[in-house]
Length: 398
Image 1 (cartoon, rainbow, N blue to C red):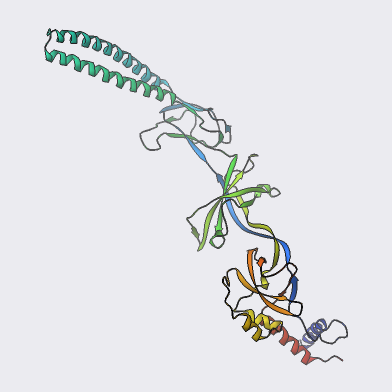
Image 2: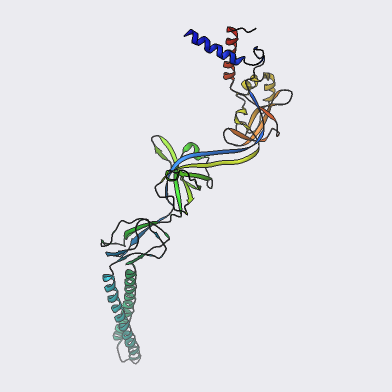
C-alpha cells in the first residue's frame, strides 16, 4: 500500500514540476485572464407536455328519435356545412303539418273577426246593437289576433324542429369522437342548459397546443411570444416549432413539486401531431448577440471582493478605498470585476445586462478588448497552495 501511495505522490509531483529545469515556478497562477468579447447569449428551459386541441366543438342533436344516418367517423376531416347526421323526421313532420293547419284556421278566424268588427262598428254607431254586443265583437277580434300570433310561433318552432333533425358541421375540422351509432334512439331535452344529445366532437387540428408543465423556479423567465422547439417520440428526427400563447395562473402540485401550465401553439398543417402525444419542449428565453461580454465568474460583490483581490495580490487598503463610495444598483445590475490595467490588476464597477448564466453582457464599466481576471474561490486557492507546500516539503529537486 505504501508503494502505491509513493508512486501516486511522485506522479503528482512530476506533473507539478513538469516544465523546464524541474524547479518549481516562483509565481504559480491560480487564475485565468480573458478579454471581453462579442458573444451570442443563449438560454432555454426544458419541460414536458401533452398535445391538445386549441378549440373543439360538441355536435349535438336537439331532435329526439331514431338516428337514421351518420355521415362521418372518427378521424374524418369535415368541411363546414357537411351533413353529419339525420334523425327520424316523421314526428316533427306531423307536428309541422298540424301547426300549418292550425295557422291556416287562425288566419280564417281573424278574417271573420275583422269582418264582424267592421259590421258591428257600423251597427254600434247607428245604435243598432248595444254596447255589450259591440264589446263582445271587439273581444272576439282580440282573441283571433292572439290565436294567430300563437299559431305562427308554433308553426315556426315546428319548422325549426324539423330542421333540427338534420345535423350539419359548424366548422372545418376533424371528428375526434363519436359516441352514438345508426339505429340508436335518442332523447334530447333542449330545455336544459347545454341540452341536446352528443353525436360527435370536432376539433380544428390545423393548429394544436402543447400543455407543458414548467417548474415554478423557471416560470418567471417565460413570457408570451417566446419561441419553442418541440419534439415527439413518433418523429424523433423532426423538430416542430411553436410560440408561448398563455401562462396559466393556477399551479399544479404533485409529490411536493409545483409546476405551472404553459400553453404553446403549433401550426399543424401536415396533421402529423395528434391529440394526446407526449412532447419534450425547449422554450427559448434568450437568444441575442451582445457586443461585449465576460464570464459570469468574473463578477464580484462587496462580500467576496477582498478574498478575490488577495489572490492577485491587490492590497486590502486599495480595496477599502475602492469601496468607500456607495454605488446604486449594487448586487442588482452593478458588480465588481478585477481587470488588467496594463500595470497590474485593478478594480472596476461594471453594469450588466443580459445573462445566459455562464456569460453576462457588459453595458458599461469596461471597454472592448479589456482583459478581466477569472478567479476561483479563495478556499480552493488556499487548498492548492497548502498541497503544493506539502509536496515541496516531501521532495527536493536539484
